[in-house]
Length: 99
Image 1 (cartoon, rainbow, N blue to C red):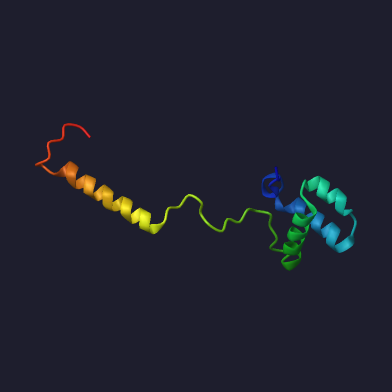
Image 2: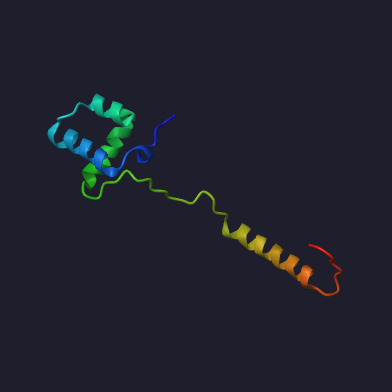
């Protein structure tokens, strides 16, 4: 199973490793990959992000969409059904003992 970098490390150690690899070549790539527990391609994706913006670099997870959100059509339909049920419950001519 792939390791999630943002759960294992904060920005500072990853930034320091990228700096040592990118700027000074002090650390070998295989050591970095072993330490971070990621594949070579993932490392170079992260390195590209670091090179684009070293000061603003972060390993924090950036979600692009909300996985638990329903569509507006479904939400409107649910609200419509709930309003219908509310009218039935509050109607005096409908004999309800419990709900």
